[in-house]
Length: 192
Image (cartoon, rainbow, N blue to C red):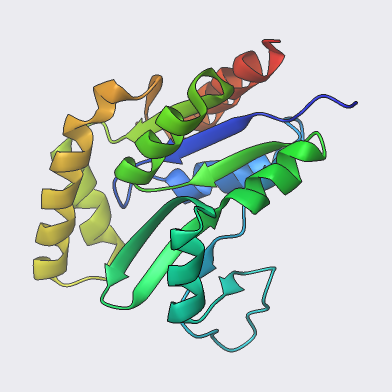
């Protein structure tokens, strides 16, 4: 039987470059990474395809899947609006011998780490400082001052949990953070 792939979970406060780092690693192709498609109860947006962008589910089907233990992690973001990672998606990708990278919030990432133990690597991407994070969020120009304040409050909570992760990468310079994350994942994959 072929060797199963490994699980990498990445979490970070909003504005820390997590998605940019993950996309760079996926595009490089050197780590044999697959990306888990999440399930959601939100309706598809124009151009989104079931099974590629998300697994679109009714609220009833999602709740049934929760009751059956089909998710490794899930969250009800708003009443009736769920997002989660299906256990079958992890098994499908790792069973094909690919490593899988999950882009999760802090609670979801730590839950996956608890579930999979040494078979999972949990990485936290951290800003150089909260002040720098605020500057980055303001520079984006996509959110109001009130939304930025909420994101900063959330970020401070998430940063307080960074020590619970296997590794922390400070994203002061994006290219350095990408390389550091690549090296951490490469080392983890190389372990038997």
